Image (cartoon, rainbow, N blue to C red; front, side, top):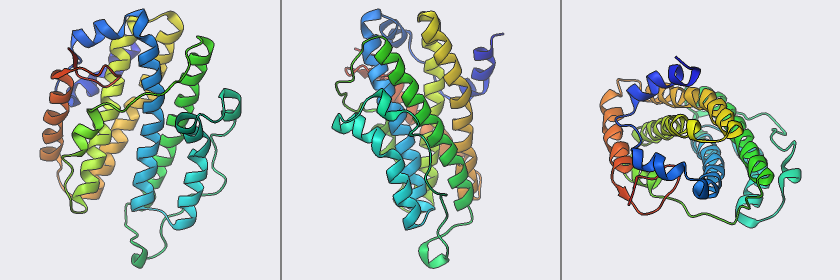
Length: 258
């Protein structure tokens, strides 16, 4: 059994369906590689932004919020404002100050705040590193980033989030777990059909993404303080429907190509 196959065992148990062959067949075509890489680049930043949003909303003080925003600024400048390049992003993936939890109950501090900060900051560092790696690949292959629209996948799950706390946070963390797990599964599905360099890269991503989904699930259970299996199963069905149903918009996390 390969390393990728071993890492995938718990992920495939977690997900309610595998990626349809129709998606793999379209994704492996050479002419679609630019679409995959552009969307992958955007997804890495979005994954980091999602983690930042969670700790900004639920865990950190105002000063730490500003530190987080400064950390993301050069990446967001590149993706959204077309400012900067690969060289300008080098050595930018670091924090200028410590990220600290809110200091009192009046500020909304929670017993899970420090754990949320610790796990999400590590995740952000890895996602921004992956962003840089994907951009390196694109530059090497002369694939420009000329913008890409968001697909239906994350939005399709987020519309099911409950409107009251802490259930809303629990739902967001479960959704984060599914997004990371699906990314893993698609890296593994796609890797064998790619050239040697991309194959190695996607297998390397599989290692870190496999831990990310587990971190999200662990946090969801801690925040809930009770069994969350029913809610996990609910989102398993929502996620599977998005993956298996017809989708005209081909993306890294899109459904079955029309």
